Every structure is written in structure tokens, then in C-alpha cells.
Length: 418
Image (tube, rainbow, N blue to C red; front, side):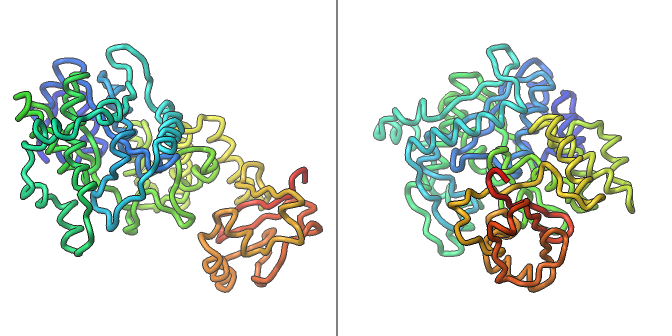
């Protein structure tokens, strides 16, 4: 891409690696240069927490606001009832209104860490598409909106085609999702003067649909911008770890575990992740990313501290680093490790060490825990764990027990009050 941007926002995101594609580089750049622009990213409320896979676009919204523009976080209270079929092999499970509302309330806490909400010209807004989707009259919607969509064109989008090519079912309910998302963009332009929709590369077709619909209905020019779908240098999808999703909600994943995820970044990804997930100057990100040998570990600690500070605060980052140093450098227990606390009633006659490994998140299943033990990767109180039949009883848990998976992942098991 050889485009040379005039606006600060476009310059920042191109230099830091956020930009995958744009519907009209020059048109958007000129709009951004002329004054505050309103943009949105949509988030369906399919889980109680966002995860690390969402963090790239949350940082994009943060930069959008920091460079003088107005971000909207659009919560999919309406579209979650349908489910986005993009690049999925099967239909999403449908959630009820109460579950959707609870998920949105929980997600709000995370957004508030990155964006300043309010009523000012560049203050962020949080809207819910249920406000306009729930009240739609089906026949009116078909007549006024549905007539602008070509089924032939919708079938050509990669997100749909990939599902059909594998001969996997695509319900009519899901097929409507792209029409509803396009309608969101039209409605946000009408209500908020929103000129830009942003999202991951998998949303390109949905974004283009919204631009096309707004042009047909209102004869107005709006824009779309996408970010790359990130994979780590070893080919894994960003945001997945051995223990499952890396949640952004501190109640679902402790700040220490979040910090540790970033500390364990592959050497080759450090510089790129510093540019995308921190606000350090680009030159400093490149300097840290070029370090080798033992020095790259200090760069990883900088990365972990910066990302954790943004989400959980500086105190949580400092505590996580202190715990990590105590665990790894001094062989101690560490005050901030993930902890499974059992009551005497829960413990009963004892908890098998295999169950303990699973319940602390060090393995995803009993089978994986047994394999970890068989391959010599498990430790208990820093000693090799070789017996998968070991039971942790009240006597063994008179003091907290430290479990380890490999050299970098640790957790505690303790009795309440112990």
C-alpha cells in the first residue's frame, strides 16, 4: 500500500499495522482531516466477556478517539438473536434476552477501560441495535430494505461461500444477518451521522453491504475499513492459549494469567504486538522487537506490563510481574497466582490431582492432564508429578499446593481459610 495519509488517524494505524483494507482511502482520509468523524464497530453479545481476539479492534477505537474522533461501540442486542454466520462451520446457539442483556452489561466494563464515554464531540457512545431492530415490521422491512439486496451477490461473499462449499447448512435466519448488519450502518448514519464502519477482515462483505445500502436508500457516501485477521508467527489464531480463550474480564481470567499470556509471546511477534497492543512510540516498539537472546525476555515483560496496565491498571501489572519474578527466579509460590479454593465440603475425601490440574485451567481436559503427567510436564510443589492417581486430601492441603504445567504456567490449590 503506497497511499500517503494526511489525517493523523490514518497515519497512526498504517504505521502501526492496523490497516488491512479500506473502501476509499482518499475519501475517508479527507473526511478525517476535515473534523471529528463518527465511526463504529459492532460486537455481538454471544459471551459474558470479550477476549484477546477482540483487542486489536478495541485498540483501533482507542486510537480513533485519541486522534480526535468519536467512536461508537454498537452492542448487538438485536443481531445476537440471529448470529453472525461469517466463517463459521455451524449455526451459533441462540441466546435469550436476559442472557444477552447480562453479557452486554459485563462487556461494558471492559470497554470503559479503553474509551472515554460521555456526551462531548469526541466522547465515545455505546448503542444497542435492539433499539431499532426489535421494533421492525417484517413486511415493511422486506419492501423498503430487502429489495436492495441481490441473493446472487450475497451468495458470492467468501463468508457464505466457504460454508456452502463445504455443504454445511446455512439457515435462513443466519442469511438475514448480513441484511441486518447493513441496516445497522444505514441507521447509524441516520441517527448519529456515522460515516465509518470498522471491523476485522472477515466483516468486509457485511461492511460493503451497509455502504451499498446507504448509497441506494439515501444517496450518501460512507466508508469501511478493516483490520488484518491476526495469527501468531507459529500459525495459531490470536487469542487462543493452551487453556482456552484469553478473556478480558478479570473475573473470568485473572490479571496474572492475562499478563502471563503476553509474557509468553513468541520472540518473532514481540515488535508487532508492541505496535498493535500498546501505545509506546513506534521506534521504541521496533527497538524492543529487534532484541535477541536473554534481552528479548525483558521486551516481553514490557509488552505484558503495558497491555495489562491498559486493561487492569498499573497495580495489577506490577503485582503480576512481581509474582512472575518470584515464581520463576526464586522458585516461590507467588501471591497472585490463579487459585482454586475449596471448602471442606467440596473437598470431601479428596480431589484427584488430574481434576485439580483441569479445574485450575492448567489443562483443558482430564485426558490432557494425564498426558501432561505422562510426558513429564507436570510438577507439584516444584517436584516432578508422576502419579496420575494422586489424591489431594485435607492433610495434603493443610498448606496451599502449587501445581505447574511446564516451566511457565502455575496455579495454587488450597482449602478455604487455609
